[in-house]
Length: 174
Image (cartoon, rainbow, N blue to C red; front, top):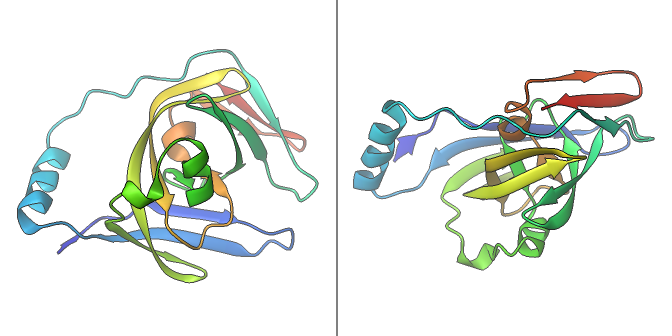
């Protein structure tokens, strides 16, 4: 089986600040398919489209974290903004509300969380928008178990021109 370089998804998920780290450890695929994936990873890809829209802000919650109300493929999802997460991570419940059937996914990524080992499935979200800032074709992972809230990670944030934290809000610049 092929070791995958790792997609780190981390977040402080409780009011007392307990951290819950999620790390992609291994992809379970037939050998030929894994070789195809390695070849695809080595070929240059077109640059992802940048965010569109104007500036937006995400207010800091009472717990000290930035919580974003997002529109994902036409449905509302509440995310914990996590600049340490390499990709957007979805709970199975949020995936289901988005019309993604977790039972039909291939959970072929092994992840480690604070609650132990779990599996994840890679998906692409057509559109994620927060207060008017929109990013299309966003890579995300549905985490089978061990994630109590969905995370808005760098597969969204990294497509912004920039973002900045203030004592009251996180400012997103398309």
